[in-house]
Amino acid sequence: MLEVGKPFPEFKLSNQNGQTKTLKDYAGNWLVVFVYPKDDTPGCTIESKAFSAAKTDFDKAGITVVGLSEDDVTSHQNFCSKFSLTVDLLADPKKELLAAAQVDQSDWKGTMYWDRTTFVVDPRGVLRKLYLKVKPDGHDQAVLTYIKAMKAAL
Image (cartoon, rainbow, N blue to C red; front, side, top):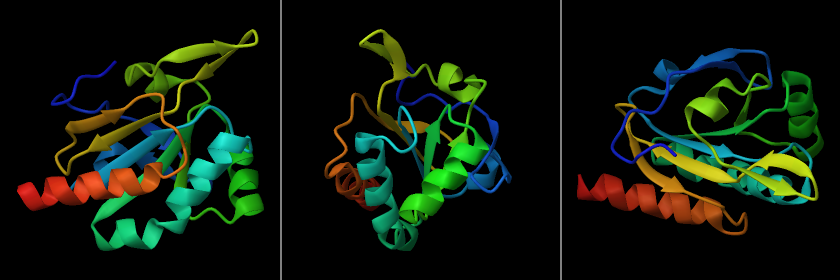
């Protein structure tokens, strides 16, 4: 797993609209990357909807939130449309960033899936906090509270 205090991996991935996004696009702002196993599954939907509902609060605090899974752009488009999601979802079907970020995988009934993980990256691209095996309920607010406290301490 990536170590806190180390640079977050560079990436070049498409969001749900097919727009290419890189780590440099988020430079100067705090970045939250929440990794989830699969579009349109119960826990992933709860987490994505919660981050979308809190998007204004994150925006006001100078924090950008993006979701990440191995689903493709079309799957992300459908997921966003179905649930009116407002955060960008990055498509990583080749598992490039998932592997570079060293996200753990678990086996559930014979199917491998990416563990729900959240990375908090500072404006310089350095990993400041790592949440492992995230429970979706209330996670968005815990992350927001943490980053606000970090910003106040700097």
